Length: 201
Ligand SMILES: Cc1cc2nc3c(=O)[nH]c(=O)nc-3n(C[C@H](O)[C@H](O)[C@H](O)COP(=O)(O)O)c2cc1C
Image 1: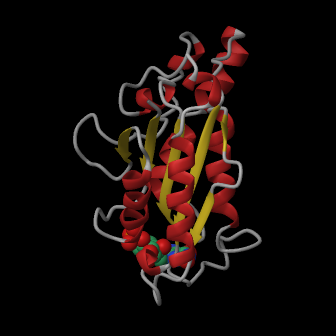
Image 2 (image 1 turned 90 degrees about the vertical axis):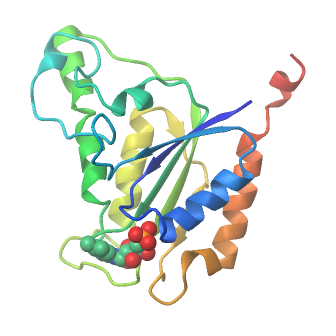
């Protein structure tokens, strides 16, 4: 059975990000777990790197929170689902990105790297149609896609063509974005299928 880990980046558990994340969950025939980046519960969510430099002397990151679940590497599919904020990923996603600082310090001080198994990825981005021109890259979704790809690259996740954008949620709720919904369904079903070799084992 395939395992999916969802990195959920909206503060709303009932909005557009949630609607499309649910489409994925309902069509993924496997085990799903989720990290809510906006969670304020103790030991939930992912705190930012605070430059403690623990990773100068220990492999990985010394902080203990849900970042551990990401580094555990026990999932087959990584789903990143976020709204676009200021033409970028929301603040808590930057916490997550900053935690990969350990890779630099591990390499420089310990001459070590963590290798991750090859995995598939899905990116679900929603936006309300208005952008932040002074902070954006080539387009409203350019920086968020690059930021998601950064995390995927660090974790050996291949996004293939599984990038789903619903960028007019101010006019059309994401759940009514028929084409995107259909493509997420198809992707979830495909990614939860066992590969040929696993079927014959
Ligand atoms: C602080 C903030 C900044 C936002 N900036 C953008 C933006 O730059 N581009 C955009 O398309 N939508 C922007 N939006 C709109 C949200 O991306 C949009 O409403 C989205 O559907 C919210 O998803 P949710 O319902 O899962 O929270 C912003 C919303 C907030 C609250």
